[in-house]
Structures are given as C-alpha cells and as structure tokens.
Image (tube, rainbow, N blue to C red; front, side):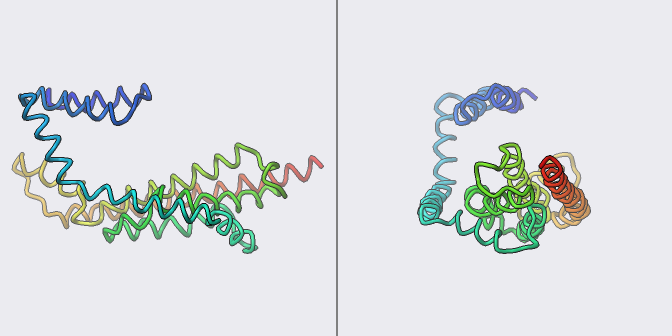
Length: 232
C-alpha cells in the first residue's frame, strides 16, 4: 500500500497551492521509490511517459488559434450574440451547453469542449452577458463582481460536470479501463459495457441536479434585478 503515497503527496501539495508540476513530479518520484524503482529506472519511466504522450503538445496549437480569435473579438461577438437574444438567460445558455457536453463526452468526443477551447472564449462570455442583462445593468462596470464570478464559475462547472459524468459512459475511456483492470486483479470479471451502462443513471441524475442548479441561478439573478428596481 506504500505505493499509494503519491496520492497523499498530490493532496497535500494541491491543498498548499504549490506548483502543480512540482507536486506531480514529487508524487511520481515518491511512488516510484516506494515501488522499488532505482533512480535510473525512474528517469527512464519519466522519459517513456513523455515519449508515449508527446501528442499532448498539440494542444499548444489550439491555444494559439484561440488566442488569435480572442484578439480579433471572439468574446465580444459571443456577448453581442447573447445580447441580441431576448429570451436568453445565464441558466438557459448553460443548459444548452451542458447536455451537449455530456452527450459528446459519452460518445468519446471529450476534446470538443473544455475550459481553454470553449468555456473561456465562448461559454463564459455568453453567460456573463446573459447574467448582466438579467440583473439589469447597462454597462460592464455596473455589473456586480460577485455576479460576474458566479457566472464564470457556473460556466466552468457545466463543462466539468458534463465531462465527468458523461465520459464514463464511453467504454474506451481511461476510467472504465482502470476500474475493469482493478476488479480483474481480484478475480471479478466485468465487461466495459457493463460499467458504461451503470454510468448512465448517474449521468441522468447529474443532468437533473445540475439543471436544477442552473434554474436556481436564473431565479437568483431575477431576484437581484427585482431588488435593484425596488431600490430605485
């Protein structure tokens, strides 16, 4: 069980808000040391992992593209689109994105969304614009900072929850294969499809529960608008 010491290192490091790269490196080293790997074997394992996952560096190309689009006004266009839609609210915007994120994740298309690709350049600005209109503000500097942060947090949460509960339905995702391998070590033979099927009720509950939270978000913003009107 000492090989699980890396999990504790990660928890402590993240709780202390230390550099994530340093925390992961130390956790990996601690796990390798308790597993009996020599320093040379540990370095070789690091090198092999980097070589096997070098395609991850392709994300930098996507980030550069998103940066260019933002410089050309992508976020401004997203806000203008929402402002032109009368019935759009923060909750409705996210309730449109949230199921799509969950369904595409269930199909294994996890890269179609994400914080860098979708939330920051599109979903968050659209949610902020809808929240801004819901509280009745006319200029950006009149929007309460708490409302802005709340809208951004809900945008990020919609992506996280949709991905987390949707991807387990896809039979070839890493979490399904990990659970199957863990159970196989103890003689429990479970097919990936069985695990995927049992993930569907959980995903449906997550959809309903978070949908209710988004409904409450709209109600809260509407009350703020009402209170602002009464204050005037």
